[in-house]
Length: 56
Image (cartoon, rainbow, N blue to C red; front, top):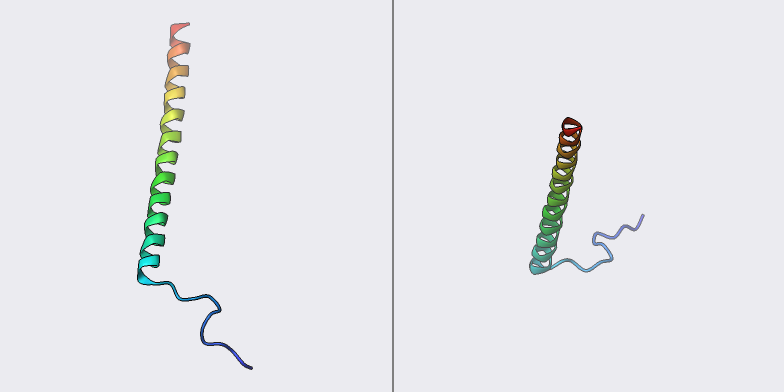
């Protein structure tokens, strides 16, 4: 068998790796914020519904 020890893609530079890590961290933070916002909106709508039912 004739296996290559290296992949076909060029190795990432340290700077490129750092940029990718920064992008991933930013995306992860955005996703966490979206999930938190969804939870807050859900809680808010539940409270509104509860308040509306009490007013009736």
